[in-house]
Image (spheres, rainbow, N blue to C red):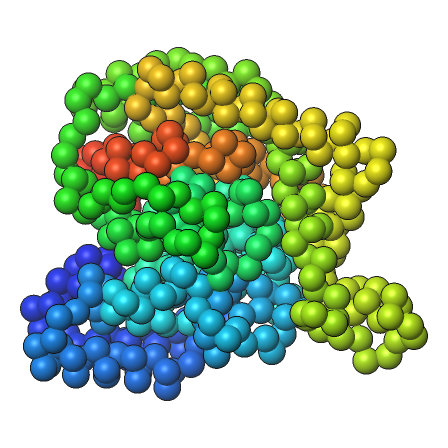
Length: 487
């Protein structure tokens, strides 16, 4: 069954002629038709467009034309990435019906590589959430237990890959939104360093935090996708003009000696015993294969959550001001003057979590509070980066749990925003510091729910980070497990 294979194996099969892109897409579309009514991972799939793309690639292959790295491979996209002429809603009613007039930079890169754009996946509205319950349209379910959340905000992308409804997907990570759902769905989630991948065409949430990332079955697939989407883009002033290594070529090269920093703050109160046991076991695997584990400290880590929930909402307040019913977004049908029209349009278009974060951010930026809150958070952010810089001076990577718990039941935290925010307690530091991060499967709970190991690397160190992650995959098989319900 092709839908159970990794992206690299599928590309090999396409290259050898074992399967056509059209046949491959037919299988994934059939899987979506069969399973997505339960899983609810996709917001939009245009079968006609998918098959037209696939047939065009098959025809080019038949003529012997040169093809890109991903030629004929279907890829799912989080629905906050612009695709020309196709719906891009950010799972919000305020953008319902919006069709961008251009492609996001990463979408352009995928097209040039010959990838097939399979469909747009569900997310927490404007990427604000950790469970994909905040979507205005539907709740996505975890393939390992459909009574539980898949994580967020890239929950649709993670669930689609995990369940075999896409061989790979793109998501975005502002505070853990690629790594956290990857951990909870048992797939690999890579957040590149801030600036490694262009944000052009990614609908903004927190502009100093957002980064496009990948969700795949294994590390080799993550390396391949990063190879395609990474690199400088002059349309994004924050995109680094740094050389891009050939990630797949160095993936199997061991790092010797390998030194892994283990922060004591990542194993504090609130970490579920089963999660800690799985992560500790993974660290022992590294030790048994020759790595040196070093106890380290991130003294400002306890302040990361508070700093993040000032910086991110402040940037969201600014970015989402454009959705006013005039320039962008839904316009209320009944209203009085201009101010009333804007208020009604935003009130009708935005969901509760987005409103909450806009109000938090507006308050933090308001006169009399900006220095105390927003600027104070930026100072803490700098201290967090300094903590990591000190560790990376003596360690290759930092390791710990991706999430404090396994996937929780749908609705169980809907009325407790603070508890929901704590789901990202181990991931947000990487965004504040601009680090590279990856979550890889490292075990299962007693209930059969996936557990993720998070590895963090210095900015622009994705080649090293991928090699360290791959060294764990070589001696374990957690990444090869698939949820049987969706076989």
